[in-house]
Length: 427
View 1 (cartoon, rainbow, N blue to C red):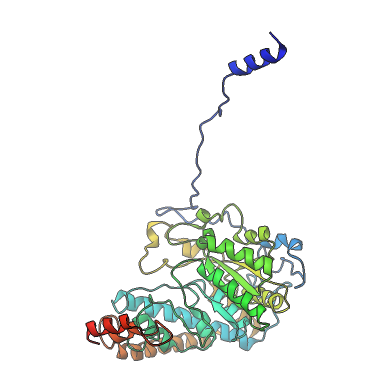
View 2: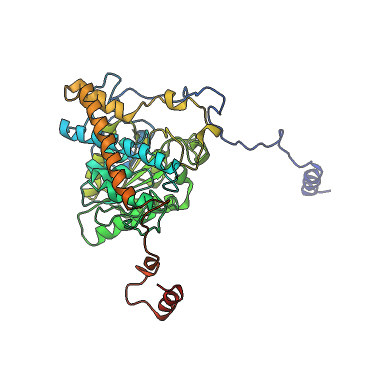
């Protein structure tokens, strides 16, 4: 037998190789479940002020470390430290504090209204108020916003009427969306606030498309968009990142990592493998990871990204590291999937309390003024609620006319089918 034949025979006789141990699939689990004590020992927050601030014109390849670090400005003493500390006056910070307090008071009142049956649904942004508030104040009022459903503070930052927002919550006769949209999914062309969508992550693709169109037309406006950590697992997120990087679209891509999607923790979307900001690295996008409960850090990072976009440096991806203190929505019970004491043990603190302490440290605020503003915000929300409920709620009062279901559908005259349907309804 030839050497070739012997080799073939030996190979044929050799048993197939197998794994030495059975294969297993890993399913990420949160650090603590209901009945257990909250555990955030795995979170190592760097000291405020230690993260470097690159030049706005820096190339993405030169700043990979920023996707794995954490931009922090406010330290434990309430001081603003480090290269990211923004040069903003006390009036702007007081306005930011007011908007955050207004948002929380609004959320609390609307949550109670839902529990009373006055509206069908609500979503609070408790603990995340600094993310939209700081960004809203950093952006120009003419810039376009593509929000998710916890960015109601953006509208407050643009002085949009609270009454208009409540009318939409109640779907009453003065609801500008005529009862067609889920409560909390606001829309305002006048405020540059794109309609909130329940289809997660679509805002990213739409924002990048809008930004590309702005650049094509030679406009000067940029845009910003927000999604949650869970939505980064959607295809729209990846499509948006590709186009934003390739065409240097003037857009700010914000990921609000509040640790939880609807009921699954951020590890299910890959957050325990690498920070969400690190996803920008693979696309060639500059990426920042920011303390989302630090108003000054969010403002500074947004300001940095704005400067890049306005100078044709392209898009920036920002992960806001924060925490959802309440349930996902009024349809959710967080006690069924996370430890009861997580809110108290979250190492990032409360964004309102942190900015308050900073202003006190500067001598620009005090406990008496803070208490007075808290009472003012609660009264403002309560008085506005009375006005909205005088028009109507889900339970009673004036509602949009059935005639409106045939409006705003086609740009021109309604065709014969619509006229026939309207006649059938007798309206």
